[in-house]
Length: 384
Image (cartoon, rainbow, N blue to C red; front, side, top):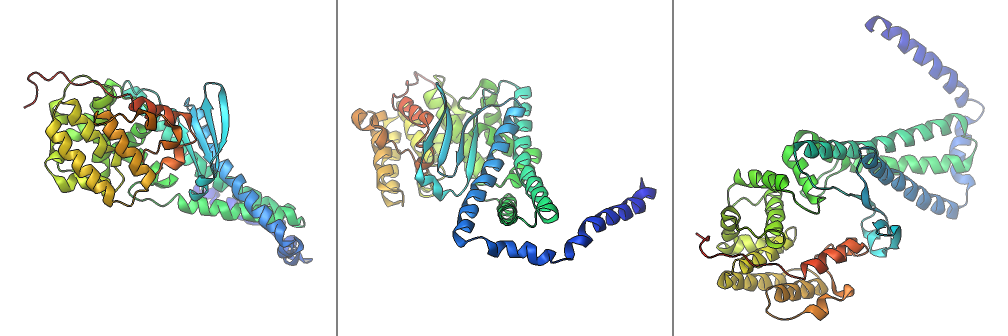
């Protein structure tokens, strides 16, 4: 293959020359760049908005079809302020103007139970494929359209302007895919972590799984067993939150390890209140209250509830969210009957990001099911 490299390079240069040399004669450049001045200003606005929505749709639907190609259906797809979601009667469309603040889109895959290692690996491969497919499709399609435009359609102002905007937005999406924060990962970064970091892959799968299997629980427990009680990393807190939710609402068997980790927060005020002030694990703070209530430990429960209300009142969380969270806890630990308030959909605001998911029926169904309460542990002699 090496001896043909020079021949291939010369052939490429020859073909490129055939196409490109004529383009830079007979006023090619003036025709190409003049396209931007031939259209009225308001047409530019229309094309800018239209191409933004088009490129965003291409990107997100590539995620969706990539999941589907790997055998995973999706629950919903967000495109700016539009939400396509799957209900019992098929796909439905809702409109949420608040979603303009996100400035993008989101696909929510329907991840089923992870029953064994084969399921785990299959879902990991599906997520990796979907994560890389969308930005790659975005780059290839935008470059192909732009190349076709400058070679064959440079005399068409609409085509030149439209595909220039497509290339612009596609470049922005690609650039954004290279960023990451503690809680948000661009597609390229997430793909790399899923392929190389088993803990990150487990985190992604766990966040999209609505129910934990025995195998899934064992994976989370193995991870926590390897971490100290005082561990406060995002992974550690998220895995503990998932396990605690499982033990509160879906499990009747008392677990000493979970109790020991929960007790750490009950005996360390600053660690507990940090869950609320940082807001990333606000739900974990409430689950700890429910957990001690389920363990019949009223003193510990009331202490956490006092800290919770104190930290919540000092936080920057919006008042309607504070009101819902406070009434929800009071109702579930049977301090007061708040069923009338909690049953009203307009009152359901379970966290700072409630406005993202409020259009989905599953969001309300999950909260209403939670508000029904939980069974208590039978603890005649298990707590040590």
